[in-house]
Amino acid sequence: MREMILKSPALTAAFVVGVAMIAFQVWLLFEPQQPLFERPVHLAFALVLLFLYKPLTAPRLPRWLRIGLDAAAILAALAVLGYYLTGFERLTTRMENVSPIFTTDILFGALLVFLLLEGSRRAVGWVLVWVLLAFIAYAFWGNVLPGWLNFRGFGVEAATEITTMTTAGVLGITTSTSVSFVFYFILFGAFYAAVGGGQLFIDLAIRAAGRATGGTAKAAIIGSSLMGSISGSAVANVVSTGVFTIPLMKRTGVPAARAAGIEAIASTGGQLMPPIMGVAAFIMAELLGMPYAQIALAGLIPAVAFYLALLLVVDLSARRDGVRALTSEEVSQTPAIGPRLHLILPPLVLIGLLVSGYSASYSAVVASLACLVVPFLRASTRIGWKQIAEALRDAPRQAAEVAVPIAAIGLVIAVAVQSNLALKFAGSLLSLSEGSIYASLMLAMVGCIIMGMGLPTVAAYIIGAVLFVPAIEDLGIAPLAAHFFIFYYCVLSMVTPPVALASFAAAAVGKASAVHTSLSAFGLSLVAFFVPFAFVFDPGVLAQGGAGQIAFSALSLLVSTALWAVAFGGWAMRPLGWATRLPIGLAGLVAVIAPSGSTAWLVALTAGWAMVIVVAFTARSSARTLPNPAE
Image (tube, rainbow, N blue to C red):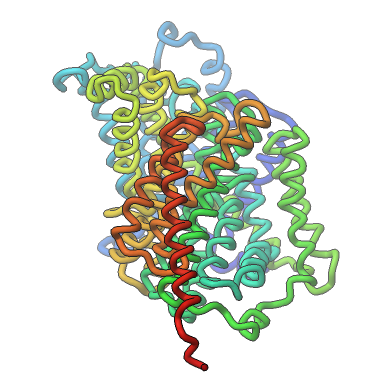
């Protein structure tokens, strides 16, 4: 532990600051504070940690200058915190648009925005920075734009007030979510990974599916879905599980790009899988004003359909391509599950507390404490100070890498709302689609995918929610379905070419072509690509309505996506040619997007499965009439 913490002065300082951040967050759980106190402190912790863990990388600058600039950024973050703490009473009691704005407000507001831009650049790259700069430019110079984009623009004082002096900008709903939810679930994920939970998921998946047809791909999907539901980050999930699953798939004959693509889409889907899902799901709960447990419940049926369709496709593809399964000897090389099975208790504690009605943050903290207790139930899984130190280091570091970018996106929300851009954009979208619900949804889908190229899911979702959700709601679609629609396509943008972050990460791990990996992952994503249309037209898919309706909707979705998957898998007791796959796929697509129980749904489902059954029966009959080579 000592060697890990004292590796460098910066890392030592980061560890101490991170532990202090954890202590602050636990204190807030039991002693909530005013928003303009807890949010600036949380953000200051995040900025300092980000500048410590991700120092400036500019080879052309001398080392002493880079260190000096990092130190200046840290001091600037502390100065901004001092501004909020010393001005706390004035900022909480002032009247918006009435009380005066001082020069210090403008200076420290501008400094905070600059720090968030630089922090976002270090955390997620330049793409988000350019988006933020575009909205900042729009705030000041919107008056020079033509048509519906035109608005009078903000002055410096007004821009400062709406972005940094109230709870409607960078200290608004995104930072609130980071303080109240995201930090605690990242804390749980870090502790659970440190005690061996992630490896347990992978080994469980190999033991459960390794000997089945396409077993290594199925194990990758199961393991990544389990780990992804805990980590909530597609790229992090790819890196953590892909180092095990991609070589395993390649060993059984899966091409490198295909193996990397399977891992990319499986890890991406983890953001859709309850109980934790991704960071964007917490933002959704805040935007909708719903308990997080309700969001997780709503996401369960679509996530199950997503993964069952993936499993079916890799099964059928393996049968078509002759990919071998793992042998019993290879599976037995996996460490025994029995001595570690008790490590499954922390996620069960988390789920149990959420279902019992406890708050999401409280549930996550108790589950994190369970991670420190459960390993000691058996001598073979006991942890030491090293594992605890890793968790104490990783949790605040990961939280900082999320908190800073989503706080910066508060700029987008403030500008879009205050300039009326969101409503004007919704009107423009409706006008372009001429009121057609399908055309509007298709435009929103394309918009989310384009925005998600190069952006983290949470950033893409927030921008998509601001711009597209009002338009979708104007079509008469329920708010929950509208938000989930946007959320799904922002998640799938992680594997959509040409910029597919999860696919690129998987390609690097698997030493495969980034282009071929992206295309493979995108092709697999098509299996569940139109699932969002199902819950737009059928609220039962999102667990809305009576038990009978929900059960029927779930069964309908599963049967429809399975038909759609047969077309992509290309196997029904024999390889399917395109002349057969295309009509089956068309029937499956109609069955997925048509309202459950409608005439179109019934006709498509009946015709599609009839074709599959006929082809499979014919293939089996032909096989029986062939002579036995052994005779």
